[in-house]
Length: 500
Image (cartoon, rainbow, N blue to C red):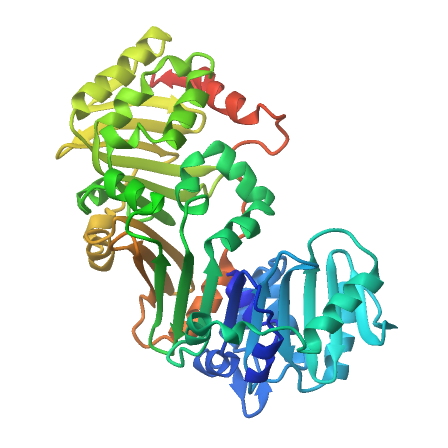
């Protein structure tokens, strides 16, 4: 979604590449003409939003992407050239370079949207609002987000340095140049491993996530050299190819080689086909629990009141294969989710008995119905059971009547080859959009976007799907204190009760 926001923010000629400094930690090139044409957003030389896209935008007018798309026809961008974005650790954390067709139009639209005024600072026509500097130099737009608070003069000087093209260019790096000049893709990205960490560490969401889920640091804090990604957007399909570059003897390679297990799609027999998101990672449980990141999680879990008494380490050690989570927004309660967990276990019956024994010790004896242990949690039923050696836990606020993800052939085939995989689906009118991305080995990943209608424009439907995603709230209560995670989990004990 971030890449597409950049796409719709502007475009530039290939000469703008020379403005990207050699010490940039990441670069994204966007072939705007290809994307606009593929999605059917061009009518002659004008950018026109199709009615089907405008309808979705009108229904989600608080979405930043929808706001941007609404402004697109009035932004005065040059629809015949590329756009570039890059990341640095200097004055600006990220910079967008865009070519303009009508600078006056761009200036008026930005002033209206941002709520500021362009003025001359250090000989540069610019507007400094919040953390962003907007500068127009001839027919070039620069939008830079500063790394720290500073005055407008300093930010303008840094922008002038970029626009002057006096610094050594990233094009001197042959490997990066090769990535940017991949003519078969509409979007190309190169980012250093340390650059990825720098970008993520500035994100409050990432910092909170890494504290709650240290496992993510296997990818973000490892010794990966760099990551490249290319996205091909056409009318019939949207395909993504990702490469993770790291030495064979790197910590990243050794960690994943020792902890990842073989893919399997059997777990999809327990995941309802209505889940908005399905995430799966194939692990060797006995090695998995020895990772320092998992040990951190176990330590946090053990400190929780009551529920910390469960021997979670022994449960995780029985995992052998995919550990899969399905999530769907609760249609009845704002901010709530329906969830299903499923995994291959070497001792599924033993795990069920351990959970049942714990619940009984807390005075929460379950109801046993057709082989499932059933509890009630708030507005949901919790069902724990085993099918074909697959241990599952369903937390739904409805009686399941839909089928399973295993019955969806593309999804079944995708997870059958993915060591780590993500699947998402959206619903627009009568057309469903599907996205998958997975690693077939520890260095190579592939992603695809497709629809339920073979005649639909894939690139347009991708935009519609992104626009239809609601700005969601996080799990738990945003008003909780620093111990919110602990109180959220331990508070579950009070709501866990047998079915009457």
